[in-house]
Length: 630
Image (cartoon, rainbow, N blue to C red; front, side, top):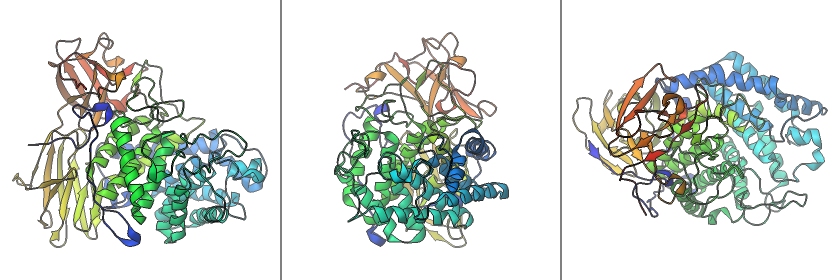
C-alpha cells in the first residue's frame, strides 16, 4: 500500500501541525462568471444499496417521517397555525419560527418521494401545501406568527426569523417541485420572494436577516426559474451585513458578532456567533460565489474554513462549543462534557463543505464532510430513527439522552430533510473527470448512459470495488478521494494489477480509457489509530481518542464496568476490531488491551445512548509518549 500524509488536521486531533496550513485552490470560469469545478450528482440520480445507509433510509421513511408528521399535526400546534392563519383568526401556538419545522419536514417528505414513490405520503404533502397556500396573504407574505399576532408588526425585528422561515419554504418548494412536477408550493415561494423584493433591495429598505437561510433558497429559486433577480437579491442580502443595518426595532441592543453582522462578509476572518447561522451564511456565500466568481467571498471563505476546521472543530466534526450562544467562543477552547455541537450546526457544516468541494475540487472539504457525517450528524438521531439529540457532547455522566421532540424542534426537522439527501454527497462530475467523494454501496447514472457502481462494506471495511458501465469507450479521469485519516492505500484493476495514478488535491487521479465493465479496486487502510488534540486544546491535555476509518469511537460505562473510570491508552495498547451485524444496527466494536486497566470496549460515537442510561466519553487518559507538544 502507498503511504500518504493527511491533507488536513483539525484542532481537535492535530498530531504534528502546530501552525497554519496553506491549501492551493483552483477555479473554473463558466456562465455568469461562475467559479465551479464540479457539478453535483444529486441523490435523485443515486441508488444506495448497502448495509449501512440503506437501513437508515428505510427507517427514515418508516419511522422518522411518521414521527415528524405526528408531532406537527397532533402533538404541537404547528400545522394548526397555518389553518388559523388561513381563517385569519385564532391564536398562534409555539415559537415564532415554528413554520420552518413544517417546511423542513415537508422537504424531507419530498426527498423520500424521489427514491420511493408513495401516493399516501404525496397526498399528505398536497394536504399541507393547500394549507400553506391558503395562509398566504394577497401581497405574497406568508408567516403564521405575524398573520395571527398582527401584520402591522411584520418586518420590524430582524431576529423574528421571517426570512429564515421563507428560506425553508423556498427550499421545500423546490424539492417538491423537482420530486413531483407540481408547482403550487413553488408559486407560493415565488410570491413570497417577490414580496420581499418589493420591500427590500437597492433604493428600498435595508435589512439583515437575523438567521441566515433565505440566501440558499433564493439561489435555488434562481436555479429552477432561471430568473437572475433571485440570485441578485441573495447577493444584496449578503452585502447588507457589516454596515450597521441590524435592528430589533424596539430599542434592544443588536449584537452584531452573534449575528455575523460585525464586518462585511467579504472581509470576514474569524468564525463568530451562532454556529448554525454562520454555516448557513457560508453556504449562501459559497452559492453566490459559485455563480458570480466573487473573489472576495472565496478568499473570505478560505480564511473562515481555516478558523473553523483548524481551531474550532471537534474530533467528531461537531462545531459550536457553547450553550450560551449556541455557537463559538475562543480558538482551541473545546470542552467535552459541555460541548454544544448542535445537530443543525453539523448538518450546516456538511452542506457548506459540499459547496466548497464543488467550487474547488479539493478533497479536504469532503474529509470534513465525512467526519461530521459519520459522527456528529449521525449522533443526532437514534438508531431506530425516532429520537433526536439537539446537543451532542463528547462526554456524559449518563444523564444526556435523545428526546422524541423539542419545543425548538429545528434539529429533528433538520435530520428529517438531511438523511434522504445523503446520496448527493457521493459523486461529482466535471468536464474531464468522474469523482468519487464518499464510499458507499451505490450506483448512479453519472453521465447519460454511463453508470458507476460501488460495492463495499464501508465504513467498516476499506475494500471498495468500482465498476463503470458505458456503451462506448469513455475517456474520463477517475478521481478517488483518499481520506485524510488513511495512512496507506492501493489501487488496482479487477485482475489485481496496480494502476498508475497521480495525487491532486486529496484525490488519486486514475487516467484512462474505460470500456464497459472496467473498474478499479481501492483498498484503504482502516487500522484503528490513536489521535490527539492540538496541545492548545487544554481540555484534552493528557488525553487521546480512538478512530477507525471515518468513525470516531467512544467508551460507554455499560460495556466497561470496573474499568470505565480508570481507562487508559498507552504505547503498548493493542486494538482488535470485530464486526457484529446484530449489535447496535451492525457495528465494528474495538477492544483495546494493554498494561492499563482493561480490556476496554469501544463503540462508534454515533451509536451512544441507544441502550440503557450510562456514562460516555470520547477522550481517554493517555499514558504513552507519542502525544504532540508545542
